[in-house]
Amino acid sequence: MLGLQLATDPRWVNIVETNIEEILTDHAWCEQKAASNAIYIIVNNSEKVDLVTEMLRIAREELEHFEMVHEVIKKRGYVLGRERKDDYVGDLVKFMKKDGSRNDALIERLLFAAMIEARSCERFKVLSTNIKDPELAQFYRELMISEAGHYTTFLNFARQYSENVDVEKRWKEWIAYETSIISRYGNKETVHG
Image 1 (cartoon, rainbow, N blue to C red):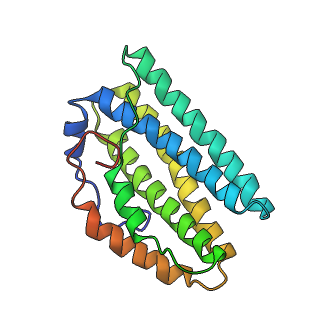
Image 2: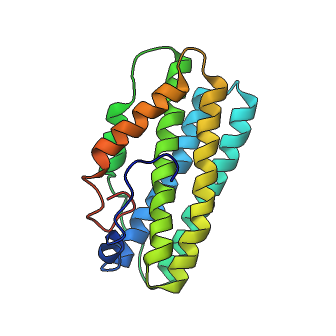
């Protein structure tokens, strides 16, 4: 699915179900960070009109998702906890190339974002098909579709704007790296944990 080489073990949902408040809080902050990433791309590439237009749409959508998760948190009598560190995303950041041109940096950022969206989409699918809570199953099914759209948007912009980077080759490197780290995750009640 989405080019990912290692699927999430469905038993991860059993861990999630032990602390729904935790995954909802973690999920809310993931949406906020996704909105911030889209804004970061805008700030650093403001001359690219079509990219800015699409990143504005994604930023709004991610903030809407943040609000949706927050509504679920409130409805269930929970409180949005403090922002969590996402070790998975931290590991992905380590893989990002830090040298090269401004354009190369854009391509890396787009591939980084595509990778996060791909894994989030995959996790939401696992949640939607395995969680016992019907409301959350439907909620994650709807979000899965949105995340898949974001994944393809980031990947397509990387292809469109690449000047010096072989995007297909670099994407395969991202997939291989993600495969090498993802086995360490899936043991906590967080979206990527």
